[in-house]
Figure 1: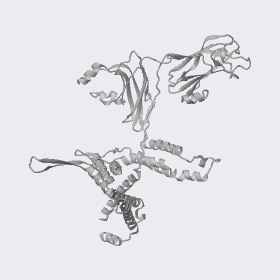
Figure 2: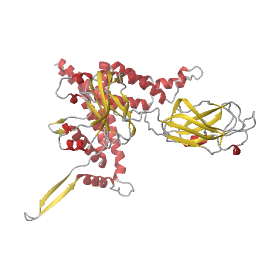
Figure 3: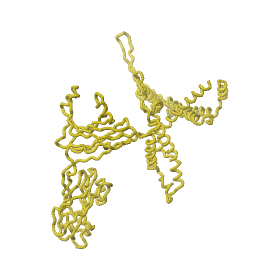
Figure 4: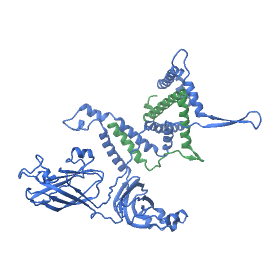
Length: 86
Length: 496
């Protein structure tokens, strides 16, 4: 309950504070190119390719895990500064 | 140079915080939405007669509408106590099954039993004893009703003729005889309902304040009489900030938001929808029941819509105030609702912490410290759909959402025209990338290993997965421990 309440507190506080900003639900169209559709289609094509060629998919998963690790590490550095594990 | 590096690091760190929050929040649960439900009523002028059944209750069934105003009773007995009071109960059930199993036990709350005791003079047959209900009883057409009759002294009265209802225990013990209700009518009177074409209620309620952060519910209930009803009728709701009605612009109508609801039959109607309120403050709302006509349709079709003038059957003009909720209001409302929802979904009762009798330390600690998956996921989803969607970081959120999706797209196909011998002898070949990759993948995955029932994929995939996993783990361990990165800090110092 405590963790939930903390998460709820920060979520509602941040959402309410920035509620005056416009919501972004799709990527914009630039020079007639619908970036949202193009990116969605491109990623969908990659998944089609990866679903048939499994080594590509497994390597992609490994890259995602590494990307997540680096992201968490950078977040810790942001909050902890020099006290973060190097 | 140092300042520049520091600034860049901060920007990078902020960006990564955003990216990380997105990763944590990209967990899917659907939006929750709600819709307003309005009371609907169909007016009928009908009377029901129940008689000839040897029972003290009658199954009335479903589909009853309107208000019960009057009960008319015919009695047939020569031995009833005097004076005699009887109770009538319209017992409400949610289903016919419950009504059959427990006819005398009301299942519905809020609307169900209406009881009273009209004093009837005993002795001899009595006809057309009219009992007017002090409060008309409203039927809900979706409910199943049972009409239950008994004497006010808890002795039983029976339906049917006096000669065939002497069951044990059902008679008046004091006089050792049984009375009978031979006929009973209850009249659903439309005297309380206006059957002219009119607007009954509008939402938002006139002269009230609507608390909203984005939009409000707009609704209309009313009635269209048979004589007024025409095909193509509709309800039009127009609303705008009150200043719009005073605006000196060329076309004030352009400042109004117009909602249209078709009316498909005569009788009662109830319509509603949600619509945004852009600004806070006083609003004017104009509600009209209008008729479309073939002439207006033709004028609109020909582009002369400005000459079309739909007839207005009836109209109202009301005002309401929109009060936008501030951030603190939103926070308090959502927090309270969310905490209550958390308690409701919790497998551990709050009584484990708060009640002296049922106090349980482990359950209480569980409730306080162990997060439940579903509310946490829902909250992360709310975080993603709320804060993380705001500009400018909403663009990054959208990119991550697309990248983390699982839907597939058809690969493009292309054609090539190849001259075979002469310029006129051309062959067109079509290459379907989807088929090619699917075929290649199937071929790749089905190559059998020599001397084994397994395929190459079966054998190699675990090894490759292991290699990738080891590679990832080594990279992470190397990064954490610094093994193999001895020269990195020296290079950094040299730069600084």
